[in-house]
Every structure is written in C-alpha cells, then in structure tokens.
Amino acid sequence: MAHKPVIRVVGSLNIDFVTRTPRVPGPGETLSATSMTVHPGGKGSNQAVACGKAAFTSPSSQDVVVEMIGAVGANDPYYASLLKPTLEKSGVSTTGVEEMEGVQTGTATIIVDEGSHGENRILVVPGANARVNDLAKIIETATKDGIPDVVVMQGEIPRSTVLGLLKAFNSPHYKTCVIFNPAPMFPEGVPIDALKGLAVLVVNETECRQLFTCVDELKTVPTSGLDEPMTELELNRLTTYLHNKAGILIVVVTLGSQGVYYSFETPDFLDRSLIPAVKVERVVDTTGAGDTFVGYFATAVARHLAQVKGLENLNVREAVGRANEAAAKCVQRNGAMESIPFGYE
Ligand code: ATP
Image (cartoon, rainbow, N blue to C red; front, side, top):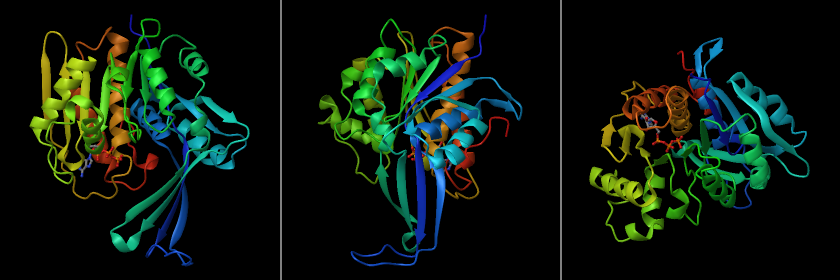
C-alpha cells in the first residue's frame, strides 16, 4: 500500500546579505556601493525548498512531506520574517528547526563586484549551523513518525555530524535512502569508509575533482586540467571506484551547462549516461541550480520509494531528466530560493 513519502533535509539555514558594488574597496577604503538586499539562503534550506516546491503537483496540493532539520538563533527577526515564511510557503515544515539561545543565525555576506562580470566574494559565518551536532536529537527528530523515505544532507553543518548521520542512516537500525551532496566539500575531505552503503552521492565538477584528491587510490589517476571539463573516462573511472569500494548505488555529477552524468550500479546491471543540459535562451543567474537539481532528484526518489521498496527499479534516467529540466528553469531567473520552480510549472 503506497504511503505519502517523507523527505527530511538535515542542513544549514542562512541569511544572505548581498551588496552590489561597482568595485571592491581596497584596505582602509570606504566606498559607496549600489545596493544591499537580504535573502533567505543556506544549502540545506535551499534544497529543502527545492524538495518542497517539486512536491507541488498543483498550486494547492503537495504529494511529498518535506521537513527541514537545522538550527537558527533564537528571536532572529530575519528568520521570523523571511526564512521561515519562505520555507513554509514552499511546503517545507519548520518544526525541526531549533531556535537556539546564545548564537546567531548563520549568515553569508556576499559582495557582488559589478565591475568584474558580477564575480562574487563570500564571507560565511556558520553561527547556529555549527551547533547542529546533537546526533541523538537529530535522529530522534528525523525518525519521529517512522524512518523517512529519504534523508538529504550537504556540507554546511559540522563534518562530525554528517559522518555520524551517514553511519546511523546506513546502519540496519535506521537504514534509509540518504542523498548526500558534499557541498561545499569539507577541507579534510570525506573518508571513503563514511560513504559505505550510501544510496546517492551528488557532486558538481569541483567536488568531483576534490574526491579525486581526497581518495588515496585515485590520487595517482591523471585528471584533466582544472579549467577543462572532466572527460567521460575520468567520470567512469571515479564512479566505478565509488560503486566498487563504497557500494554507492547512484553517483550523479552535475556538469553546469554541460548537463549531468550519472552512474547507477546494482549487482545485476550498470546504467550510466551523460544527459545534456536543456538548451535555454538566456542564462540569467545560475545560483541555486545545483540545489534545485538535488531537491527535484530527491523528490523523484521519494515518490518511487513510496510505491516500491528499494531503489533497484528506479528509473534514474527519468529522475535525472526531471531534475535537469527544473535546474534549467532555475538558471533563467534571478535569485536562489526564489528562482526554484514549482513542480506544476
Ligand atoms: P550552484 O552552486 O550554482 O547551485 P552547482 O555548481 O552545484 O551550482 P552545476 O553543475 O553548475 O551545479 O549546475 C547544476 C545543474 O543545473 C546542471 O547539472 C544543469 O542541470 C543545470 N544547469 C546549470 N547551468 C546550466 C545552463 N547554462 N543551462 C542549462 N542548465 C544548466
């Protein structure tokens, strides 16, 4: 009997302060900038919003339950007036967001240098995100109505929390489908053992290259130059390694305007392919494209798991295709959460 699928996203919540300036001031210099705007952000909440929006099959119905688990500072006016309402309007429950005393909500101060093709400089203060470390409490919240169909995680909460949750949710007791997007990659990397039994790993090209440098056995494999696209041979080699050594079922590498590569291996078959990006007339802003992709992919996986036990019969190509289309809509609009499309669009 099918049930309404449940996704829990464990991750960061930020307030983004975006200042646009004709140029970046030098040391000791004060400059008049163009504008300052405040936006809801954080990779965790962006991906929760993407899951929530993807789950809307019409403006009034949502077929997947999505909940955000994380932390913000207590009595934060920006959380109350901006972040929380944005999550809720996107169909994301915020009951798992702890409002912590004595710490600020995470912030990102983003300086957009209009003089250098909109290049960004970003300062992140993790704030409450760095305090998302009570494993027992997170697991209790995540499993309060039973084991969720899908748990989504990224790299903006402490590495020890992520590694602890990977272990817990891949253990027989709490076994569930974890979708892990190590973005940004932890400076210490991710040990291959921590990925053992992982259902889905999603990385972009940068994180994929970082995997080559933090996995000992791959360090000696020659890779193409940093500015060149990864070759299909490199992608095949890395994903084969991740399937064989860690038993990861599905590895997805997002390749920006080049599209998406995926590799899905079960004991019975191997399905891998490079799906080109959807051609768009004009790219306006790619912020949030990766998060849109992860959210739409997670929603497709959760819908599948509500019907069928296990991922063996998942149509990965179709799930990747849907996420690829949603990410292409995102790049044609400005902003991060605002630019994520609803599932019915
Ligand atoms: P971000 O950090 O900006 O959210 P990312 O680096 O995590 O992005 P990318 O690999 O750049 O992720 O992009 C994610 C997906 O978005 C791509 O796999 C593709 O589906 C879509 N996408 C990105 N750029 C374009 C583009 N120019 N045209 C169409 N689709 C795009």
